[in-house]
Image 1 (cartoon, rainbow, N blue to C red):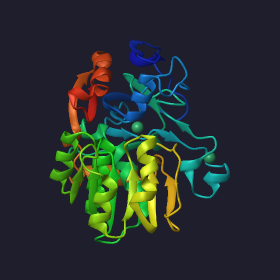
Image 2: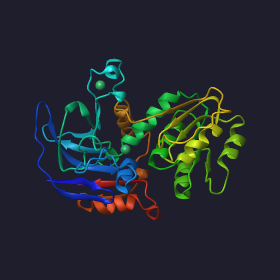
Image 3: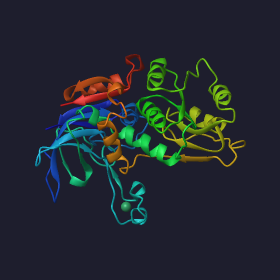
Image 4: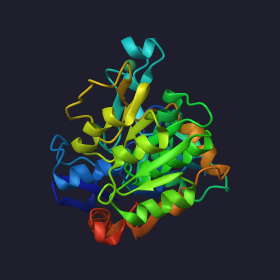
Length: 323
Ligand SMILES: [Zn+2]
Ligand SMILES: [Zn+2]
């Protein structure tokens, strides 16, 4: 069977691999659709070099269970259940945790053996393609659940890629006012379409000035979803005193905290906890992931899919792979 195998930067190939072995209570899941994430692009561009050669990529995908015939979303994390963090109900931080598509072979293969507990059945209300864009919804829910905003609170979101645009959607659903920032206008257009109160292109306007004008005393919450140290370093100047800043895209940078009185800064990573709620939101059409799918490719065109996702001229948001 075929799989997308990492051989190094700019060298990810579709090649033949061995069929998966069904051990224990694992079940076979046939790949239906998956999406390329910013993480995959970090590996592709050679920005993250720690990925093992021979590793199969992919951590946002859906498939069909061979035993029951159900269509399922595959959850990409596995936790041990008995380490320090697992025992405290914090599986996200499991010290022995595994992540499919990074520390274990991922989902971009024709068939995968999976533990049933990592599979979320979906109804016919959700298409294969929508079910391939669950991870950024889960991440958006996680960040907003951390913030616990009140209706009318200001949220400034730096970066309006697929992840930032989903943060915008979920923040609006929570009754917040959103200031969306991105260097690419096509993304700002979408943020406005989803209802963002302000859409700022920092190439043309000073984001710090705009946020201070609109919010008077700074944004209640700030999300860094652009993935640059420069945007990380802007966050203390955007947040109000006692506000909260979530670093989602990038965690490195120098934080000048001089004026950020008692504001909280934290990193947020993906967790399995929000997956069922994320699937539910997509199913009930409360968040739009369809509008974020800009390109679709067949499994054999994986190379082209990566090149497209990596090419700003193509205006990519989420690039989908289908069987
Ligand atoms: Zn991802
Ligand atoms: Zn654990």
